Image (cartoon, rainbow, N blue to C red; front, side, top):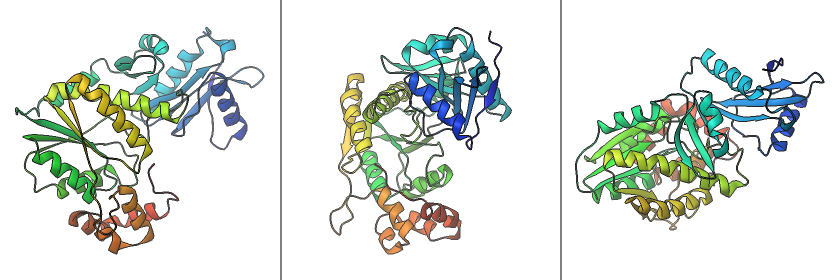
Length: 350
């Protein structure tokens, strides 16, 4: 066990942050853009020799200088980050790691959820966490010949989302709607969920689910040990699909619906992988052509809705969203969200 101490790295400490980034790069890791807290271990010459960070309830960007490996520094980093999270009353923790590091973290009390060979392992500090989640979902299992699912972020809920759900609901006995519940969007989860449920209240064969901790968005998927942006997208897609396949087995889902994505490079690649992988597990992948706005044939996207809100163009907004969404954004309840959207430089999604 080393005699070094673990210290917080303040965002204002440019020298320390530069040293953290240098260490990460030396160990083949890119510093993730989503970090709430960072710590480091220094040697006697004040060089950073180990580091780790948190984002929400995930541990990220953990590395030890190759010159100091074998000294127990990673154990100290993980212990420090766990205690930091516990002090905030966050007890259910997750991490993503390379396949060859999974056993090490297993020895520190983390358990494998899913593994994508040669890419990534998704782990949590609860032995039964994911199985407990599946058991809760199983209580909502409904027997039917055609059971479908779709996953929505809906930031916010548009006529395009409504069209996708109506198509899926019309072609199946029951439709499981998974709403991404992490709060990494301009529109908060509770509002997104409310607008989805209000905008689909006329459909009687829907079962709504919060995604919880196990289905995450592109916004917060870790990118720090993938070589480039496409590798990040592919890792996220493969991991998400591995989780979804386990969910589908529990709920008897035999089709997953997605919207065609001519505008989003990220989601386009994701759909391409989904279309290839899901049939391997006996699940149909149904890609639905996007609904257009009726004026110039342009597809309806949440990005355009956010841009209309940012520009204060509520006439355009009215043509892109269901009445329930429009009613919310023209009410006093939406004022803080509208201000947040207006203060954001780029509200597009690529």
